[in-house]
Length: 113
Length: 110
Image 1 (cartoon, rainbow over the protein chains, first blue to last red):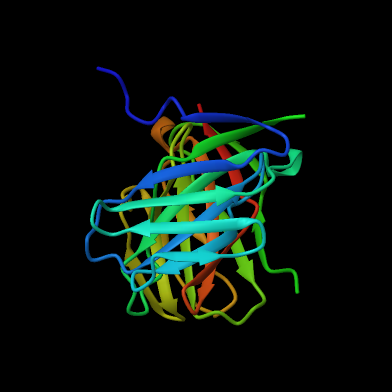
Image 2: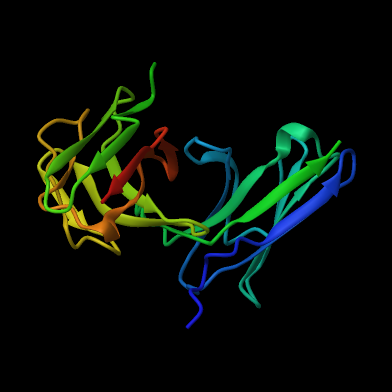
């Protein structure tokens, strides 16, 4: 059968446009969510996080939205730049001092100059 | 601060060989962890440690051993490498819910 996860979802956007990357999480008990950016050949790099008592959090050019009803997370990148090209992962953490992260499969963002 | 460092960057092993992947952090974080990343997938937790002398299993611990004798170091041992362990391995250290990842070790088992 087909192996889940071998084909990475991709998103291509024009430089200057906004990007929206989506993620579905699995554990209703998760109370902390993080978005990571991974450039080729490097480890994941923290972008932004959000706790389950919030619906929205903004950073510099990035916004994370959390919909606990449907267990959905999104990352919005404003004015996407070529340097934003990378694979983006969402991760969930059950909190309470636990640092065990469960990662989504990732989305590859390609920015067209 | 160097952050989280990992050695080696690349390694090729034959089936049955053993090796240790090194991980060190200079941020004095109590929590450290090892993940593996397979093509087209997110990271999966192998083992973690909440402090010196304390380790526990993650999602995919089989075939790997860890120990934590100091706060700074958290080595990952493969006792008898198998082709299924071909992957990229990332070490992370964490504090206040924030995890910092090393640059990774790309391991190929033939």
